[in-house]
Length: 221
Image (cartoon, rainbow, N blue to C red):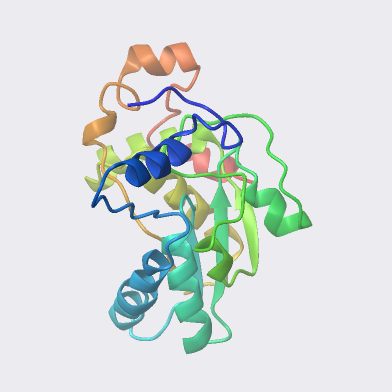
């Protein structure tokens, strides 16, 4: 474990991992951000799996990005299978990717309780992504979906998966009837029980879930 530090700081975990690998004889540093084997695994594996599971009909794909491997590989594959498939990034506040996709410049505002997603630089994996656009979803939407999906669908999600689901809901509101919308439920809720599913923690963050009957859905922009 290392203390949090911005990427520009040599004590950022990325730089520490790189230095540590260089200092240990025989060590291997996977470098999941820049090693494009990451995106390749999703191009050759996850992308075709999704395509086959949906019978070759995917109208919209949406996902968040950390290393960029998942969204990079999948959207590259989908763009080659069907030019009409629209792929989007869903980004939390505090990340610069939404700004990069919509304006061409990295600019991050605010912060987020989500973990493992959101970044403020272009990785080699994310650079492979073929995107129509980007949307932002809030922490509140992610929390709402964590609790709604757990109680109504039996899906016990982590914050990244919940944000992806929020992105899918956002895009569903404007999609044609019958559109096939795909996302990735990439993390489970077990390791978040003391936070996302803890009333005291949620009260401290002012993120108590809104009603679980789905009424909040109509308020999504």
